[in-house]
Length: 359
Image 1 (cartoon, one colour):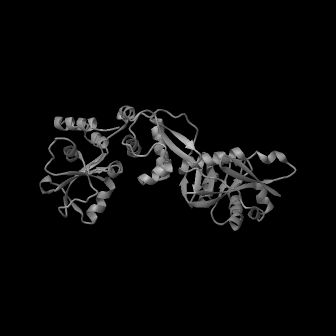
Image 2 (image 1 turned 45 degrees about the vertical axis):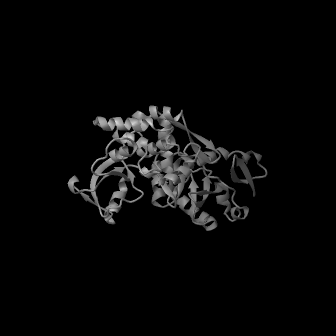
Image 3 (image 1 turned 60 degrees about the horizontal axis):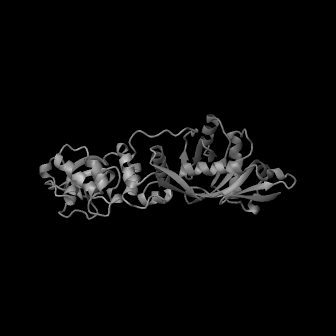
């Protein structure tokens, strides 16, 4: 038994080679490419599959060497061994459980089976038995990393008509405000914004469906490329964008000093940018989920009456600090938070803030 390596782009695959049967050289390549694509779409990073050391392959029983193609990869910082089933109809879960034990004796605990299409009942039994597996384009069960049990069927992407999620809106606004977004990998954006790679993959799907961008692939990196200039994107996306404010509350601060990383919002932000007079109580924007921690640690106390309050808090669906380096929230989010106002002075002020925006 010999081992061959086939290279496709930057990826290498390993297969036991029968020296008397040269037709086996290219029979497995497309299957691994589908696995790569599925893992990238599901986990948000493009895996590189590498050859398995020959001495480890030789430690496998002949049954497994002829039954599975072996490869190793790193996903989400963890090294996994992948064993790809060569029997088109697959086998019973009990058989896979026995194979997994033998594979783990050679390769360690992080082994996943790459299987052909299986019935829902057999997949459920695999999950109950705790057997990690991948069904390309359909189902993923990797308890050591994550679980994706969604069916994935090919479909025609339809233009999006509803509003963007606030996470997708955040990514679009960062691009419009000049932050490095286009040309930056989705995985890097996820780190920048504090979201998971899966979330950024979903954001890319939203923006593509909204015809605002496309995804370019450079090696293992998936990057956003926006369609049109920034002013054009802003105009085209108006019906897709919404106020980031989820709620407003009155609070009383425990000290006169406001935390330095808080951002002025609402009328208070407009007062900093225009001649509009500020309200009696200043307004600040916070990530909505930070409110509970700030009340628990004594930074502020929620009150019901504005007369005993010192501050008005807006709870935002994304962190306002991700879009500004100033003591105020960014101009685009500010506009979205105030555009439905019936106060003519405020309406005039938000128009002025956009007039001063440098794209």
